[in-house]
Length: 108
Length: 116
Image (cartoon, rainbow over all chains, first blue to last red; front, side):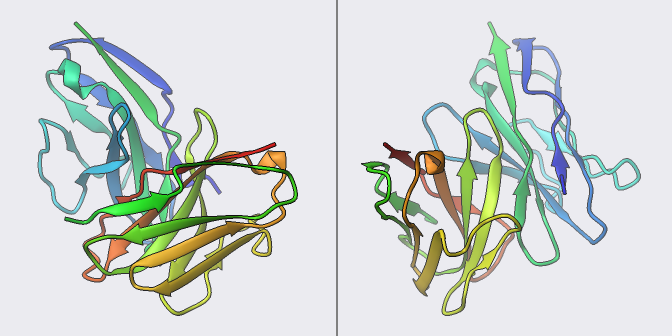
């Protein structure tokens, strides 16, 4: 069953523009939601998690249980934000499931 | 801290042979390790979850006799692709969570397997 959906494979924005990477999930239990990022030629790394409610590198994400969404947002995109972004869900058994990823391209 | 290392990073083998990929947590104890498979331009597909000292739990559709996973210690898990075939060619990524279980996964750099 598809637990995490990222509808956009590629998102291109200009530097300084707002960006929103969409993520929807389906899970009947109490999931934890994360955003992982993979910069060019680097390994996946945690960007942020919903329980922390923190802003990392200007990014924020709010868990909306009604809409089962966990969209990632940043008001002003920077060129260094260009990367692959993966939304992930951790289930009641601490297994992690990833979305298909969205490639963010921030143009100068 | 929290470094996960995979070895080898790239391996080429002949069809029918077996290949072992190692995943090590270098500076922490990993109570749980996860093995993922990633196809080009696709998501990471969870293959199995391994806990130290116990049998791995495989996801539906993943052949446990084909993909042998061993988690012998708190710092090492291995994935052995047995009797490899060209369709097993893929990028295999391991990740680990710490004993403290903050909910964060730490990823290895991945291993690319090419089966001729």
